[in-house]
Length: 213
Image 1 (cartoon, helix red, strand yellow):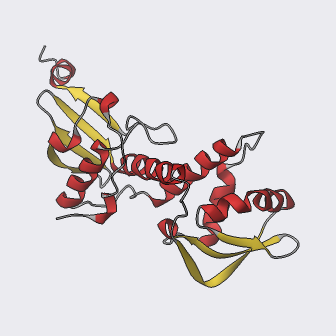
Image 2 (image 1 turned 90 degrees about the vertical axis):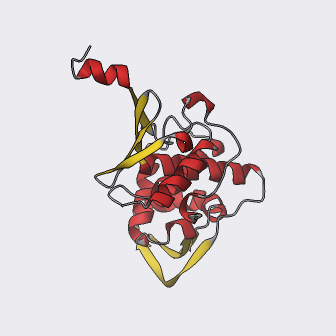
């Protein structure tokens, strides 16, 4: 059975990880967050959120590179009027064209407010005001970042917010779909924010930890 949540293949191989996830024996899920696998000579512990975050991030970058990229948007039933400090209002004003490219429908509403009319469909489950404030926090250290760096930050933000969360139980078909897609995704060693996607423990290493060697 195909599970759409994880079935968005990306060109590229996870060769640097030297792990083919779909070839591993799935053991189970711990705390609704970590997926445990056994290989021929090792145990793999996979962070489901970090893994899905990397998949979404690479898909966003790939689609953007095609120059025909505009994530599906979802209009809000009721527009949200959000009050913000002047510095944040100015920053959002500068970022509006890029935010629109990424699926946000937002515009100035006079003074210290903006009106949010729509969100990227990927983030439709989030509370709009909280999402905007989290986005601003992502750019707290603004500095003189380039447009490419801003795009990467927004893609990382969308991927993190849209990825399957910790403490969510996954079915076996969902785990299988995640593994297949991860095998086709580059740079799977870490999520876009630098956290490891998985940890690998050799059986020899485990035996040493348990003082069997």
